[in-house]
Image 1 (cartoon, helix red, strand yellow):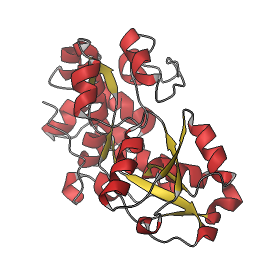
Image 2 (cartoon, rainbow, N blue to C red):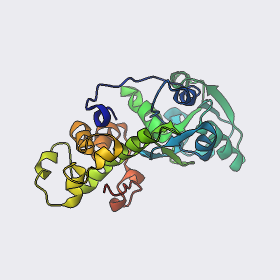
Image 3 (cartoon, rainbow, N blue to C red):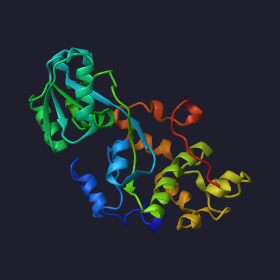
Image 4 (cartoon, helix red, strand yellow):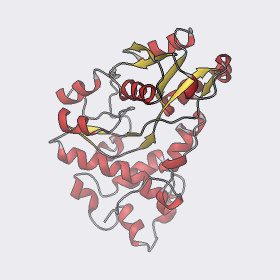
Length: 271
């Protein structure tokens, strides 16, 4: 977003927020954009005055346990204590999962994700439930101890994650949405961070519009016409972003592949 609007990736400020703080901070204007593990739901759009700008990660809730527990399936967690973040969709999803399978749940609730992780490592919970991406990131951060933790195979919810803005901030919303689509479009067109300049003389009209050479599309949004090209020059296409940030966590791309590869990631036409 900083690259597309201001031309400089460093002109932004990160504000760490808890699950309880995040929506209030966005509603009040403390932050302009919420980008974290926030699930797109009806109630969040209908009641909170917020709107999601797309899905940059199709995720789902799962469970992680210590390997020493000997558990290989979530169906073996009857009566287990589960570390959960209060105020999250995961808290509700886990309760629904246990109820649907006639299992007893002992929820152990925390406000802060670091408290959850610390308690899980200390053995205060049998299992840790969250988005699979969050669990994989936790495991990857354990270094030499990572093999002590097992991500169970069951994915028991739909967690479409993406950027969130305030309703009424529609010009900004448009930019957020199309900046999200820019790396996807680049990947579809075969444009990467390293080869983008080689497309300068392409006769493909889709490429010419993407590069900002025709169409005046950026100015329609209120940014420079080459905003999409700037994003890819600075960060790469969607596949490159995945390889850089997600693959090291041990997560397969799966349904986050492009629609042309059997996945769900799909960008409307830039025209």
